Amino acid sequence: MHKLMMVALGAVAMSLAMPAAAQDIPLKGGDYWTVADVMIDDGHGADYADYLAGQYRKQMDWQISKGYIKSYKILNNVHKRAGEADLYLVTVFDHMPTNAESEARNAAANAYMATTDRAMEAGSGERAKYRHLGSSMLLQENVWRR
Image (cartoon, rainbow, N blue to C red; front, side):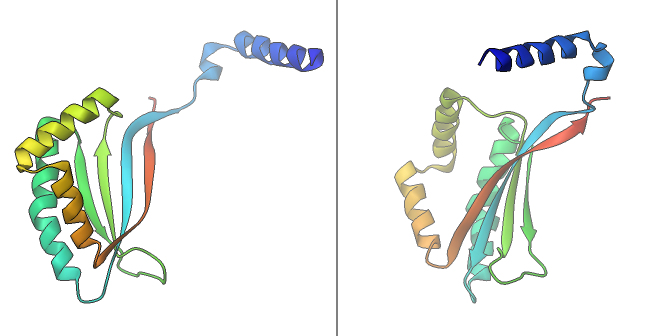
């Protein structure tokens, strides 16, 4: 245990002895991106496109207007392989909201959309008959420091 402590302290001392410029990493964290996989049953592409063009677009455009998100994209998997998603829903934002911010945003979104959490969940359940959610990723963009 003592040796491990000495090695750790030595590593810290060496890192402090290096010039500050040598410690800089040329990349830093930028915007966050969520990517959600969506699979759509055959014959229901238009049904889901109607949802995206209606309620989804209205809510996402409103979030941009409030500054909650920076942008969003709907990406089509053109050369889909077995087991892959049909669509990828991407949302870009600059920071993770606190719990309090999330609660306030949700209440404001429900008021704007004239809905409730229960109604939103029921709508998602109806879409689940033909739309299936796969994995979801949270990515952070790397941007150049200089």
